[in-house]
Image (cartoon, rainbow, N blue to C red; front, side, top):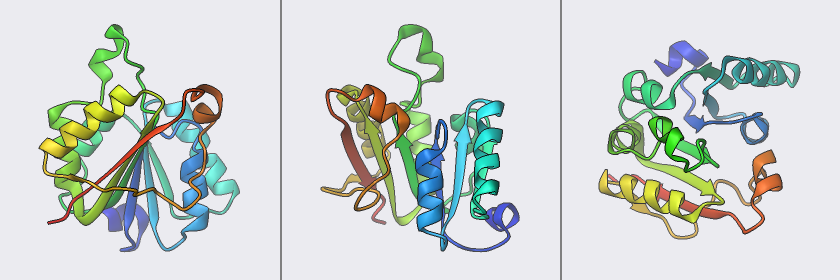
Length: 178
């Protein structure tokens, strides 16, 4: 599938909920030897990110609008993603947002199934409970916590993080060893 999407066989990293795409575009510019695929909930945001990628000449970026749970669960092949990036996932922990929450056993199993051996899932949020909950689900799906793993030596900061993470950002990285 990724050859059809990108036209090559470079490793693929997936960002779920890229927002304005700041982190996605920074990673894509810094690492042209990898492909970056983003799943954004709204069509307008997905189109805006692709426009910014085209303006910057980033040919290793693709963005699709949709529900990440559905895209990962139904379209992403087994053992095909080098890394997942999930930063400040929406929705916030409000009861009415529950139907869109990523922290489900099915989603965790699909992420683990699609991650290559040696692949990594990077999580970050200002809500430690959210990182803990999703991290625990990914752990039950077969991933292991990786101490001190970060996406990059100086990871880009999201607009959301600059604005809302006053109490600090909580990170977790989990990997597939087998």
